[in-house]
Length: 362
Image (cartoon, rainbow, N blue to C red):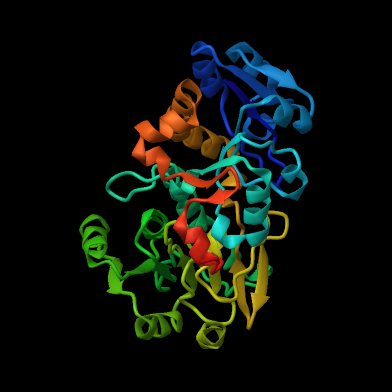
């Protein structure tokens, strides 16, 4: 199979779909890999690294799409890429279709085979290709939240860990999944007081067992959320419903109850956000303020730490890329039910019901 790795062109996206180590494994299996020139530069991988691993370098993104049977990316194609995608071409990347009807319609029109990292699902319901980026985003959420709490960038002026004689900051984490647990772990490490909420009592029991005593768990209800946001300095939105839009747990009218200068980091922004006032931002212009509450809603948070993110992503995607390349997408998905759940759009037909539900296309 011919595999193409284009350069990511989304704003401030420095990750790349495959490391040289991944290329080496594919070429060892007699596949051809074409990498766009400087595609890995932002992640610390250079053209010579890819050439040494067996890849061929192409100058333009148009050439990469034109020659490839399968495209391996990080982020969803953006508008300038839509026309480059060919019928029957396999596109393997993060799509998050439920948050963009425009993207969904474009991929339907392309007649390509869209396999979404974020819906590849194991038998136990876990999402193996989402986990590493969720881990990165969860940890980064606290790092960014702590920074934007600083007064020079319109924050409340609170040091999350406090100091002797001054109480620590209060962090509210919505969702006790991968993002929430990693965020709670980082916040706890800084010495903050952390409350983590979820509707899954089994998950809350797990969190209660593994976290230190200054991380407390609470059942997620609108009443409890309304109570907790009044005292929170930093709120992390880490709610995920597989392949579907995130529920709005904090509404616009609730912002007035928060401290002026409090910070919201909505990691669920890729799925529409779990805060009503969320709108996607970029690393170039990451925040906005509504009712004196700072919102950080960068849709590709792990792109800020591209080396770590690219290596972590390739570690988990490579086995699936090899299966797709070695067997072809149809046979690979027939043999591997985990991979089959990643199928979202196949040659013009939406095959993932959450997308249909998100746009009320039934």
